[in-house]
Structure formats: structure tokens, C-alpha cells
Amino acid sequence: MNKPKQLRRLISSGQLEFIMEAHNGLSAKIVEEAGFEGIWASGLSISAAMGVRDNNEASWTQVLDVLEFMSDATSIPILLDGDTGYGNFNNARRLVKKLEQRDIAGVCIEDKQFPKMNSFLNGQLQPMADIEEFCGKIKAMKDTQTDDDFVVVARVEAFITGRGLGETLRRAEAYRKAGADAVLIHSKRPDFMEIEAFMKEWAGRLPVVIVPTKYYLTPTVKFRESGISLVIWANHNLRSSIEAMKQVSRRIYQDESLAHIEKDVATLEEVFRLQGAEELEDAEQQYLPVSEIRSNEGI
Ligand code: SPV
Ligand code: MG
Image (cartoon, rainbow, N blue to C red; front, side, top):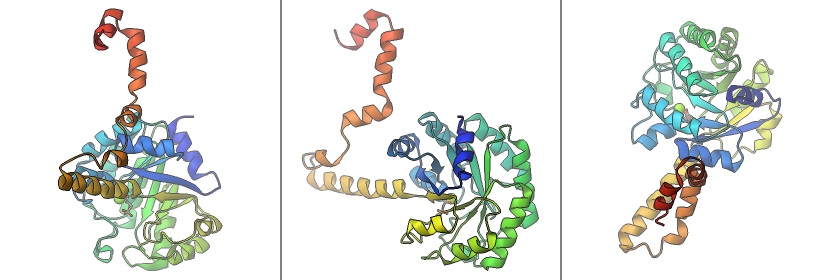
């Protein structure tokens, strides 16, 4: 099954499914090995890993380069957090073309304006996209994809910007009519109330995707009961690595020694395994002349 088909199956399985954030080839591989069936290529995490803000400071082609490594390193589908599509309908449809060339399974775009700002920063003040303009963008993206299974998720930021249930429903319905394959309803509340209210009114018109970063205490069973299709664990590989790197750097700086740290870090063998060193050794046996293999091994 190709990657777009795998992602389509995930969003329309009729069950609650989960995808996990990654921000480079290594973290993508770790997500796959953990057992996840899909990857969220998070804009927040990719930008943070590059050392820049989640305000479209990284160019879209720089994001594409990261995605290419993520896609090459894994066999599960990637859903890109495509921000606002990096411009108008024309930029967004070119994005789809380039994503398909890199075997990215789908993209989520949000109804804000370029350059975007992360939803958890001054959400109330963020200008939203005009509904008609955003619908045109969705249509252009759907018309551009060559694989019918490529997924376009329309993300509604009306709750984030304080506009309430009526506007959230109005926008979600417009995006459904424009051809979106799923809607992502975002909320920054510490509870599930807004999304739960939306789910009652929405009544399964299209699959619904959520990002429970702020309502992390909500039991997963509630998501299942209310009919959510896909949960995105959006930034936890980035955040765990920040914590781990801070601790290790601090400790080595203070100790001026590695003696106390070795047991807390991945072994070099694990790094080589994740990089696929073994495959190269096998390939060398197959493709290199014997004399070169012997000299590589120092014989
Ligand atoms: C991301 O992971 O970049 C997202 C989700 O867009 S959020 O940070 O919650 O906006
Ligand atoms: Mg984002």
C-alpha cells in the first residue's frame, strides 16, 4: 500500500487513530519503530529544531528538504503541517506537487494568514483567512494532486482566535464543501469542551483530527466516544529531546568529564543501527571488490 493510501486508511478507518510528531529523519524513524502508523511533520518542531521561530522563518523549500529525509528514513505516511500553504492558492498547489514528488502522504493547511504564528501565542490577535479565499486554496490543492489518496486536511482556527462554535461550524462546513478530506479542529482550552460541542453538531460529516497538546489530561476514551478520527501528539519528541539535551550538556559542562553520562545516553551502536549501518555493510559485500572490503576493514 503506498503512503497516501495508508494515510487515507488511517483517517477513514472509523476508529480512533494516532500519529506522532517528528522533526527530522532520526525522530521520524523513532516514531515508526515505536509502532505509530503515521507521522506528523510539525511546523513548530521543525522550526524549533532549526533554531528559528514558528512564523514561517524557515522557507518552504527548507521544510521540504527536512521532509525528504523524514520520508526516506521511514515507510509510514507523513502528514505535513503545511501552515497556511505558504502563500495563496498558487503557492499551496505548488506545495502539493512538490510533496507528492517526495512521497509525502498529505498536508494540513490552517485558515490564517501568511506569515502564520503558532496557535498558542496570542491566538486571539491572529487574523484569519477569508473563508472564500481559503476554500479556493483547498480546491486548487485537490485539483492539483495526482494520487487520489493524497490527503488535504483543513484546519479551523476559529476557537483559537476566540470566535466560538458557530464560526467553527460555518468554516468547517465550507471547507468540507470545497473538497477537504478531513477537518482539524484546534483548541487551546485545558479541557475538551469546545471540541466536544463541535463533535455533537458536526455529526460525522467528515473525519475530525485533533491536537490535544493543551487538554492533555482528557482521557483518550473521551476522544473515542465523541467520534474523533485522528489524534496528533504534536510536539513531544521535540520537547523530550530539549530536556534530555539540556541535562546532558549541563552535566558534561559541569563535570568536564563523560564518566557520569555514558549510562544515560544512547550507545554508539544504537546510533549506527538507527542509521542503517548494517545495510551498508551487506551492500559492500555485494557491490565492492573484495580487495576494497578488506582494506576498509583494515585487513
Ligand atoms: C504544530 O505542531 O506545528 C502545530 C500544532 O501546528 S500547534 O503547535 O498546536 O499549533
Ligand atoms: Mg504548526
